[in-house]
Each structure stands twice: as C-alpha cells, then as structure tokens.
Image 1 (tube, rainbow, N blue to C red):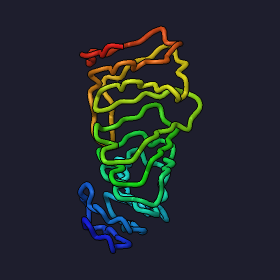
Image 2 (cartoon, rainbow, N blue to C red):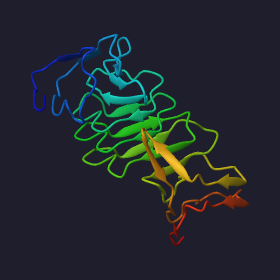
Image 3 (cartoon, rainbow, N blue to C red):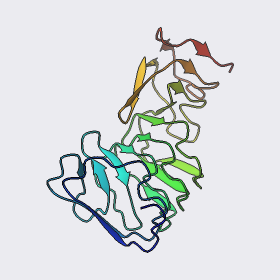
Length: 212
C-alpha cells in the first residue's frame, strides 16, 4: 500500500497472518485501522485504530487517529511512519522497547513514557524522525537504557529520576520486542550521577568499557 495517500481506512481479515514492516508506507491520511476479532496473530482493541501483534505485544501500525491501548510493550518498525497528526506522544505505562524507524517521517517531537525500569532501542529507532525529547513521567525508581546490547552513555540519564540505588547488577542480556541482545559493552558515563552506587556487578558478557 506504499504511497496510497487517498486511503482512509484499512481492515485486516482473519486470513492475514503476516504484515511486512512499513506495509502502510506514506499512507499519511489513514484514520481507521481495524483487525478481525478472530485473527490469530493481530488484534485491534476497540476504538484504538492501531494494529497490535498479539504474541509480543508490539504496535505494528498506527495512524493519525490512533489511541494507544494499554498492554503494549514495543513500538515496531515504522509503526508511526508518516503520522502527522501529533507532535507529542504519551505512551501507556509499560512501553519500553523501540524498533528501527519507529517514528520515521512522522511529526512526533516529544515522547513521554512511564512505568518502566529499562528502555531498549534498536540502533535506528529514531532514524528519519523529528524526535527531540524523550521524557520519563515517573518520579521514583531508576531507569537504565540499552541499545543493541550496549548500555548507553548516560544510561541513567541526567534530568530523569536521580538514581538512589546502592547496588546494581548489569543483566547479561536484554530483550527488545522479540529480539534478545547480549549486553557486551558499557558506554562512557553509563553510570553518571549514580552518587549512591557502592556495588556494581558486571557479567561475563561485558567485554568493553568506554572511558568515563
């Protein structure tokens, strides 16, 4: 359906069990997305105008009238591509992983998330996007960020909740959607601002630690 700018709605029947990334490329005027109730792979909660892959709780496709339902965990590749109805996206609690080009060519500039303890990005999650701010709603707890198996620089980011933990165990692997990455390196300043930290456990999978 790439480039079908005149299309306003799409219905996924029960017989469709595979949807390619960006299958709605540049269908920028879509306002209705629905899935047959008996589809074994995908679903579309009432009034959400969103297509969800049921098994891994991944948002596959959104449109200009999407209302994100509770329960999703991952924003899939190109999920918000070409959506130009909003600049601020308030994610439901629990959304923590993001695939390549998740917001490509969309108008989204600010993303707010909450109810999570870690965030996982694929390397190209914000490619071709206008995203400028990733804001954490929660005011308590800690947050670590991983990208393709690397703990990010400023993984416990300044401006987000100040880490108050005294011990931290770096996981050997991190799941992002249906992919699992081995955590093999630490970015520079990964534990910046962790003033209470007295004990850090580094797994055998870590083979590189950047300066700082």
